[in-house]
Length: 329
Image 1 (cartoon, one colour):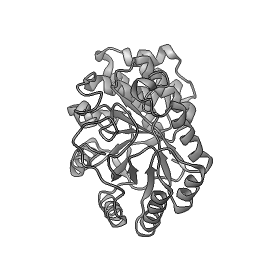
Image 2: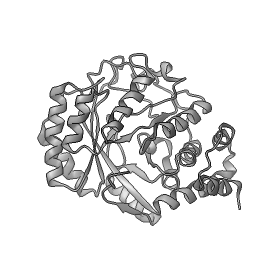
Image 3: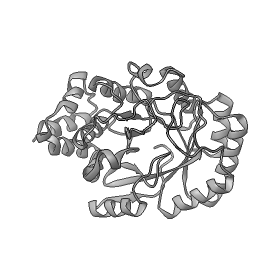
């Protein structure tokens, strides 16, 4: 039995990796990648079998954001030529939900740019969510930025199942990425939605010139935060952003990051998110031996893989689409 499978068995029994063991995952040789994936898959299969959860994003408000996040084409300091628009009509949000339903998506993610929503924007989303819930068997995730407590309650009452607010990077590296809000601002928002009984979704972006220790710190912080769903984004550097030209990742390292997330957060939904197509490339299918969730369709301002191609990939792997998401996951 490989050392990675032995470690996986210990993780299933409740063992938490120490810092040295976590770094060993990221520093493992490429010759060990299949054994590492086998260990991660052993954990993944224990909790999720061969089921895969599908998620789809709709970008309901693009650009026009006052924040200065270095990775984001929608930020105030970006010169990327993206489409910019205010909150889209409710009918467009509902059309997106219909498409999600057709693609057998379990969770439909309503995303809007900005530091945080106005009360009018929250009411607009609330109205759309109520209709979505009446028409489709979809879980709804909202991602609207920093929230006030009364806004969280409105979303909960409307039927929002999950709220996404990524930590994005480690606390130590945060100021290298943005200074217009703090790391604690992000943690506080996740805690607010947890208090209201909304499932917390919080993840990371890897490849933003952080250290391997930063990646370990991210994984451990998400364990402490107890995020139910962890989207793992791999930087797709966009021209016109401060991180333009950054190209630190290769497919094998991305797989190691996914394995690390599984070893440290064994029971959680680990989702391969933005940048998987350009960073994992031909190794995308292998990522699902560690992760159990993906986005289908496009992301916020970058194109994804055709949904039909994702379905074919899952079919080829022998994995089963989990349509709908249990309320506690």
